[in-house]
Length: 409
Image (cartoon, rainbow, N blue to C red; front, side, top):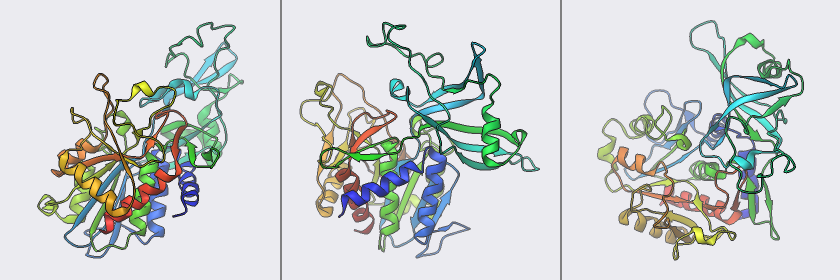
């Protein structure tokens, strides 16, 4: 496999996907190019179908009785613009009133040129608005730090205040209006924009770096690296199995939403792929929940437990926890290890230090909803939830190899 070429294609997908809505749109484009059709009614045997809901999407190949299910999520932590956003400060600036979506590393968002992207809800002549995607493709704002001459605590563990310190600076004209700018960009009247879901994103795209070009620096690796690998693997699969990919929204804020793993989307997809009695068809099936994993950071190796210590470009990570915040159990863990053996890719394992709680994934929700063993896995990265995360090109490519083998075996 040409890992460098694959990494370039992954970065291109991420750069075009500054938020979940764009990731969903670009996923649909990938699926259509691979011969998938939007589901209309019930799927017939042999069909390749997808179901798109704006910020979450699923696709499946309706094959035989062997079932393969993979899931990941499309959303990432971000600065989210509030409904009334033009905040005039000092009579001289316009800042954008905002809040933090998910568990972002706040300091990483400062002093970076930020674009704005998301969905605009436009008047349509009826009660149901037209949802239109928007992406500025240029820097519209920045969150400036305070100089150490003025804030002597800035390098002493300063705690950023989300309401005070994290508001993007949009204009030096106190009469500036974000929606007016956005409306002009899309060729609409300002009053046509009834509502919106808009997020800031790092306008500087992803890149490979390092002596051998084997590292990836990019926003939203969590979880677009896994989402892209699953999509690409499904599109490229030549399989007689029934293979399903579910890409959810709102994982970073708990998943209990219409498009989240705690909602009804997964069940809807399974009914479409397998019929109303889908749970009867899942006997013997083991699913994969793919989210990113924590690689050991050389500045803080003490944050990891003594034995299970993942490193970048050394294998896909199997994640488990006694609290079951990850869905992996003995059955699904063994399944994953055997799958890696069949695919010829290395694996690593991660557990939290016993004195530190870890994060959660969609894995437990998927496993509970479908009633099947589910392995929680993911590629290892550093700086998870930073505006730019750090991963490896080999882990990216091996994820694709693993998922493709899973769908086909």
